Image 1 (spheres, rainbow, N blue to C red):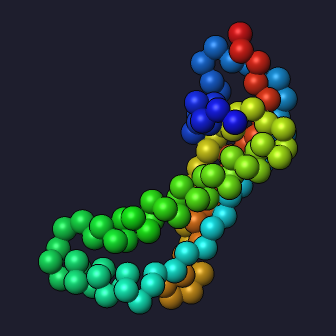
Image 2 (image 1 turned 135 degrees about the vertical axis):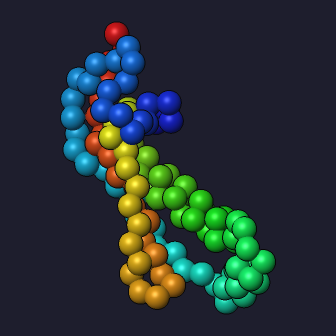
Length: 109
C-alpha cells in the first residue's frame, strides 16, 4: 500500500472512494525495560525531553501503524482513510497502542 494514500481525512484529493472495506487496525503492547526505566528516571531528574520514552512511544506508534497497513493489504485495500491513534495503559508500565482507520479502494480521477 502506498503510504501517500493513508490519511487522517476521509477523502483523498483527486480520488474517489469506490468501495469501503471496513475497519482496519494495528495493535501493539509495549513495556519499559529495567534499563529504560533507569535511564528514563535519570532523564526525568534533569528535566526536558525524556528521549528514552519518546523513542519507545515512537516505536510503538510506528509498529501499530505498520500492522494496520498489513491488515489493509490483507483486505485488498489500496488506501486507508480516517486514521487515528489510541493508547491505553493495560497495567502499570504496560501500554497498548492502537492505530485504526477505514480500508477503502480508491480510483484516481
